[in-house]
Each structure stands twice: as C-alpha cells, then as structure tokens.
Length: 395
Image (cartoon, rainbow, N blue to C red):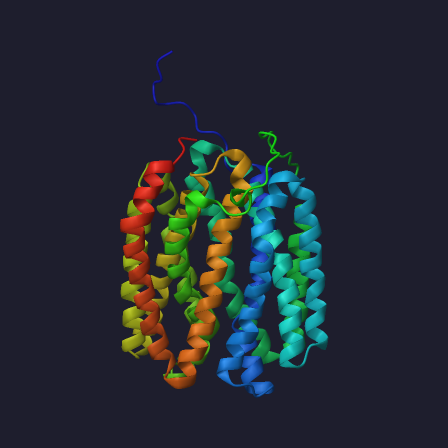
C-alpha cells in the first residue's frame, strides 16, 4: 500500500503524557526554588565564604552522581512506576531536613541524600516519558516535556526570591515541600505498563552508561557548566554589577524558553537535530560573552532571554540524540547518561564559578562560561555529530 503522506499523527497529549509533565514540573520546581536561595542564605545568614557555597551546592550533584549510573540499570530491569513512586517519596520527605539543618555540614548532608533520591526519580520519570511518547513525535514530545523542566528552572527562582525576601527561609522550605507533594501525588494517576524488552542476563558497563552516547555526553557537559554558573550565582552577580531586581532575570529566561519551544521540537522531528544543537550552542556562546562584558541593565535582561532560548533548544535536542542511539532495552541507561552529563556540568559550573569569584569576579566566571560553550560547539561538530550519524537508530 502506497503512503499518501496524509496519515494522522499518533496522539501526543494523552493522560499519561500530561501526568508525566505535571509530576516532573513540580519535582523540578521544588528543587529550583532552593538553587538560587541557598547561596544567599549561606552568605547572608550563615556568613559563609563563596568558595564554601560552591561546595554546599555541589553536594547535591555528588549525591546525584553516586546514584545516576545505577538508576539506568534499575529502571531497565524493574517496574519503572514503582521505582518512580519510591524515589519521589523519599525526595519529598527529605525537604523536612532543611528545617533542622543550620550548619554547612548538615545542609551538605541533607542535599547529598536528597540528590541521590532525585537521581533515581528523574531517571525513572524521563524513561517513562520516552516510553509513552509515540516514536514519530519523539522530538516534539521531548520538546514539550523539556518545557516542564525549563519553565521550572526559570519560574521557581522568582517565586523563591519573593518568599525568601517577604518571609523566612523556613517558609521557603514549606513551599518546596508542598510543591513536591503535588508532584508526588500526580504519579499515582499514571496508568503505565513498561514495554516488553529483550531479556538481559549479562552485566556490562553499557548497562550503566550508554557508551555510544559518550561523545554527545562530553559536549553536553561542557554546555551545562555555564548553566550551573547562571542558576546558582546570577542573583549575586546582579547585585555585584548594581542591577535592580536581578531576580527578574528568570522571567526573561522563561520567556526565551517559551519562544524556543514553538519551533524546536518539530524541527527535530523533521531531521534537523544537528542544526538545532549547533544554533543553540552559538547562541549560548555569544550570550554569555555579552553577559560577562556589558553591565547594563537592558543587556542583562536581553541576555537572560537569549540564554533561555539557547538552553530551551539544547536540552531536548541533546536528549533526542542520546535516546536515538539506544535500543528500547537501553533507554534507562540512555536517560541516566543524559542526566548524569547534565549533573556533572551543572555541579562543575557551580564549583568553578565559586572558585573564580573567590579570586576574581563573577564577570570573569561568566566569560569562562562562554568559552565552555564554544568548546562544546567544537566537540559537537567534530565528534558528537559524526558519532551520532554512525550509530543512530531509525525508531
């Protein structure tokens, strides 16, 4: 039978897809409410040096990295929804720990354990969403799913800054706890059965880390480093260069994310994933360069929008690249490798920015961030792209 090219597309916005988006949004929202406030809380109330602030923030990433590689194996071999519920429950309960943690050591401990829980939670959630999205609309579906993460990254800090400045740190923790509970509750509404896969009997490194995605992982790590810098230190940077209401950065960043989502997913589904990734990395390189050297308020917020566009496009595009070199029984490993790469980049960015700020300024840190974006572009062009073309799957 000859295809007319007019076949109806499979449904994307079904109940499972919507619930996955809701649960992931609120899980991420709770996390990103704390990200910009922890540095303020440590420096303003606990009087901690910037270099130690980086250590506290990165303890979350260390916890993630301790669990993420094994999360892919667990998700590929056990019931994904049950793992999702279990890890999400622990992740939510650990917000209670912030009520009692009032030293650098105790905060690091709580963040380390919670990071491990989020490691399993995010891998399970991201793998389930890949299963429920029709393969013909994978780029579009992951694009919209990426909106939940990008919007939570952009909007949560705005809410957090308002709560912190209007009330107290404990009120912020209550807000995080309520938000996480909403996300956890939505997981119960998922009616999901793991697709049948090939029985796996042999343990190998590829069960934990998707080796075919390592070139893309290197590029993704390099591009995520400046993201760790911007999310953790942009408010302090705004105060450093005398920007009024620097928290509004996240509003413009969210607008940039929304604009990018209008076209990026469909471009990916039409085979333009490389063009999308390359354009996003060029945008990020130029934006961070301008952000670091021009200290005018209007440029500050214009760069926020451009950075939002850059990351809004790149995050789902990279996920598409990771997933498309993985067979169905390796999707957990692909998701784990993808998220681990992002975690390494964000954690490294936080440490690097804190270290540079101790000896120079945050302007210098963001200039270095621009260089990392440029390196990411070069790695993508000369390593990731040819490797992907060699190993990509058709479905």
